[in-house]
Length: 101
Image 1 (cartoon, helix red, strand yellow):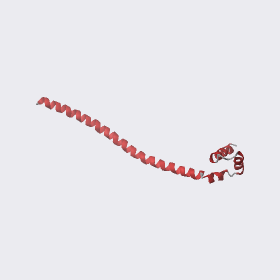
Image 2: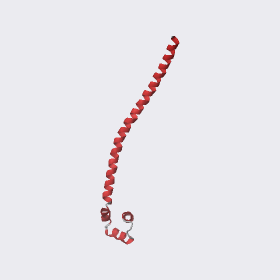
Image 3: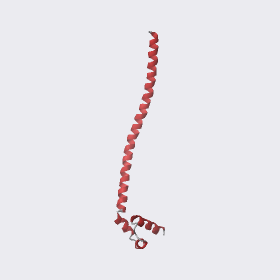
Image 4: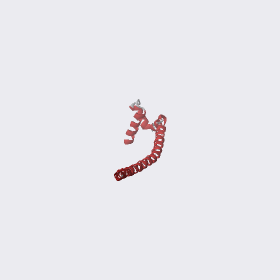
């Protein structure tokens, strides 16, 4: 019963203009499977699956680049902190040398 209801819904998706009589006949004689093949639904599903697989590969590739960028940003942060410390030291040394002369 649930199977028939599911097939009826799927037929309505593929062919919204189908009458109730056509839907019942398709469910009864098993031609609903042929309707899916003829509608291109299966090939569209395969194509969609292919697109998702391709997108997954792109995401994995992009993730490697993002990880690299994140590592560079973290290194830059460390270098900036170190540079600020050295600037503070340089300023302190310069001020102390002015006092000597």
